[in-house]
Each structure stands twice: as C-alpha cells, then as structure tokens.
Length: 328
Image (tube, rainbow, N blue to C red; front, side):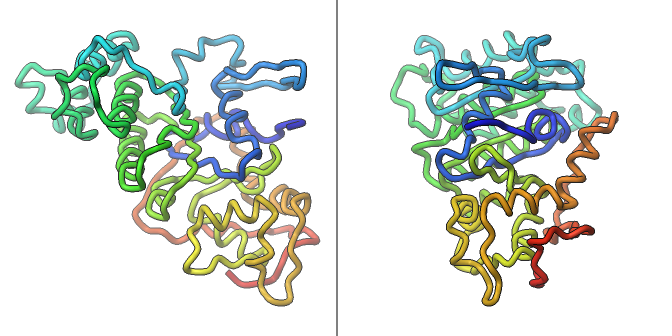
C-alpha cells in the first residue's frame, strides 16, 4: 500500500452512534486501515507510515488511544483462564470505569429499574442477558466454552467500557452466520445506547447482517470507492452502470466491483470503469463532498437511524466524464 487518502476522522470520529462496515477484497488495506485508526500500525523496512490520525481535533499521538478506542480481532480473543465469565466482566468494568448507575439517563433508569431495586449492576446484567451469557456466567473462561461464547464475552467486555470507538478486525471468524448476526446486532444496540462509533470488517456476511450497518466504506488498493449511507451504496453503483442481480448479496456485489470483477454486472451498452475511474467518480460525488463538509465542520456529527430503507438519493450535481445515465 502506498498511501491512504480519505481516512482518519473522516471515517469514524464524525458519526456518533453509528455502525460502519468496511468492505474490500483481500489486500485492499482493511486491516492496515483499522490498525492505523487504533494506533497500532508502525513502519518497517518495507513500508513507511505518514500522515496523521485526528480524534476530536487532537492528534492520536497526543492522547491515550487505549482509553478512547477498543480494538479487537480474532487473534486477540484471549481471556484469563482463572476467572469466571462474570468475574471477567466485572474486572473489565472496574478497569475501564464503565457506566455507573448515578450517570444513567432517566430513560436508562426506567429500563433498568428492576435491577437497581435488587442492588445489581443493571448494565452488567443487561449485557449478560442480551449476549446470552447468563447460563455460563459462573464458568471459568479456561473451560470448554464455545468459540461463539468467547466472541460474545469479548464483545461484552467492550460494551462495559467507556470507549468512544470500537474497532473490529474480522472478529467473528469461525462463527456461523446466525451467530454473526446476533453479535453484530448486539454491537449495534450497544453503539446506540452508549453513543459510540463502531467500525467492522467481516469476511463472510449475509444480506441480513449487511442491512444492520448504517454506513459502508468500500476499499481497493488503499483507496475509497464509496463511503456513505449503507442504503445508498447499491443505487450509487447503479448510476455508474453496475446493476446488482437479485440473487447476489450486496457485500459480494460491492467487493466484486472493488476487485475489478464488476464487468459481469454492467448493463448492456455501458463500459466497465477502471478502478482509477471509480476512484475519480467517488471524488466527484456528493457523497465525497458530504464527507469533506463534515470533516471541515466544527459540530459533532451524529447518525440518526430510521426504520425505512429507501436511499437518501444523493445525486452527482457535477457528473464526471465517467458518469452513466442508467436509472437506478
């Protein structure tokens, strides 16, 4: 990878309470980008890291990212074998100064009223319940618990912290699609409650999992081909002449385009675009302009979620020379 050009606070720090899915073929730079955002990337004899990562107008090098960001990958899914599931979560809560009852909003007090009356930690009980960990709460983590339960435990540890950004690099490898859906849905709920941001890369996902995300970032060779609301991704490429068949899932369709295999989806009479042309189209799009407007603004940015699915319908007011007139 030679460079990254549109990442950092343009990507995660702008959207409070949002879920972002990072897509791209193998070698597109997904893991490298996530490591850069988490402050874990470093140069070596074969690569040089340049540029800056900024959170809330502060350089990442000037703040303690371990307090701000939670980073988890399948390789880091390790727990102390001498603590039970409940003890592990209590320890994680105490170390991260998790959300305390005295800081609950009135809505949260109403939601957790029963647990408060019983003298329990309501958020801990909620996390145990929503992740279906109650039945193994007294099991040692070193015992034979399933891979799915280990993923749930890691997710629960992050949920009990006060992280502003949660970064997941292919965390659910080995989980079936149903388990992946449950875990992503839980992380989505936690992001809403805590008003935190989550960005995640996944290797295999169903259409149902894809639809849980608020925003999509599509990478190829370290460049962004699309960044915007999830429901706008398919219509955006339809305007460029790429039509998704009903039998192809959205993530597969987008990654095929990013891998240079999008000619199978091109409409008759249209010419497939090169990856360089796709990058240029994105740079000319209103989605890119909207990102730049957000980055250059001073106000905190929030994601507001609704139940309806139609796209926002951002249009290319100044079409590039590659713009297609195909209707979405």
